[in-house]
Length: 80
Image (cartoon, rainbow, N blue to C red; front, side):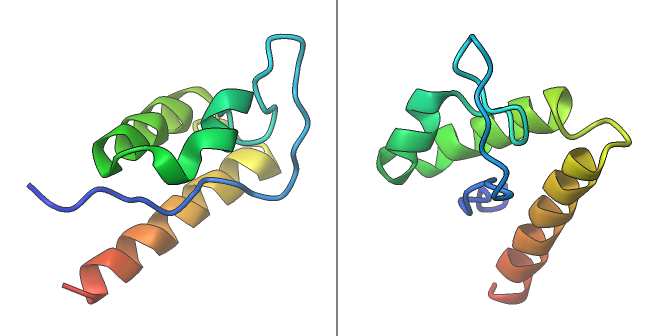
C-alpha cells in the first residue's frame, strides 16, 4: 500500500455552513483545527470523504480540490 496523502486540502476559500463544514473543502471546523495532529491514515480518510462529497462536481472549488490532491499525489510518488 502506498503512503497516504497528508497535505491539507485547503483551497483558501474557507466558509463554514451551519453544520460547521467548510463549503469549499468539506472538512469540519474541528478537522481543520486538528489537521496537524491527525495521523496519516486519518488524513487520508478525510481526503477520501471530501473528494467524494466536495470533489466530484464541476464547480471551480471541486476542480481545485481534485487538482490539489493530484498535485500532492504526484509529489508523494516523485519522492519515493
